[in-house]
Length: 94
Image 1 (cartoon, rainbow, N blue to C red):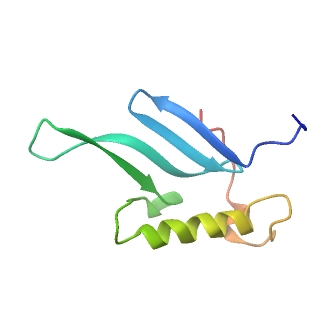
Image 2: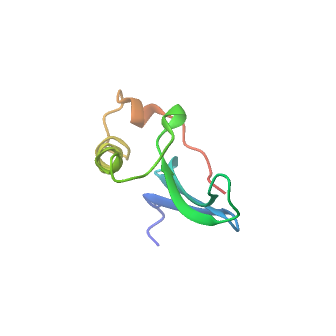
């Protein structure tokens, strides 16, 4: 290890949910979901920062890709200090 914090954080939150963060900012969760009006369960990925949480699907996949690109360019040791994604507080995922 070089003493640096890893760029991507992964934390198991429960037996049904895993959180993903970039330099300490949570941006997605993979979880087991339950289908409405049935006993079936499935899997889903919810993504977003703050109140922008949404379930990943074919229609919003480009938004997920864009979020990842913005996180990679704005959030890191050399990111633009005034960028909103850079300024959001880091926190431990676990």
